[in-house]
Length: 355
Image (tube, rainbow, N blue to C red; front, side, top):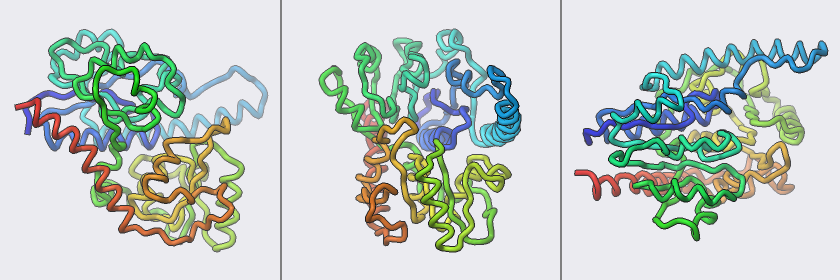
């Protein structure tokens, strides 16, 4: 155990399942090796703008009703996520952008990551997630931050990256783009959700909600192709279809409920990276849709499938059948080895640099 005080800067409160669960996993792993770990309670202005409940820019009745029903859903969702945050996170006081410079000096170690904290499109180029506020005597660690699927074009970012004491990234796309522009070494590591065993996720997952067998459809963006495939398959198998747009899900929508929906599903259809991650962790039969709402390929999702040797499990593959056998023992060995290597990078750095 190290005595350092550690502050984590991540997307911990954006009402997104992957973001919340990766923050939980990163906090939990750091608490295994440090006595004092907390999440820095900072909220990016651009992301908060997108989380607003109400938007009355249009006044037609259809838009008004959609806004009202959407507001009810998001009020419910906000309450569920706030409850989860209070239960599992150790949070600092709320910090403004100005506070980061003045009120984070007590941390010996600052950690940024994972999630898409380095995606300029999401944060509006907020340098806080590059720990630009850190003092010279504070250790700066980047664990698995992501630039998203967009190409890295702003090479001025390297001035921040070269200042990290330990630099890791989550995806090969970032690694390839930075190879020629960094003056320091870096490592590609796994998302924090893969650092925890299935039993650890079991321990916080909610009880089973649907007693009958069901197909779980989890979408980041509503895709006609994905919806049609899930509906056709559920009808063919005579299974109930539960989507994250349905009333059943609306009634149980906290991050721990999300774990339950995946864990107890007979089949999962998803376009989500973390929907796929937890299908793998809980050993669920699954199918992926690997295109964004703009038609771009979701590279991190495709690379996850490649890593576990399941590139064929996409709904655009005409030969794929969701009931195909999955060699779970082999896949768990791949995931376990990757997690051990990834966290071992952190442990090795600490052993070499912290006494």
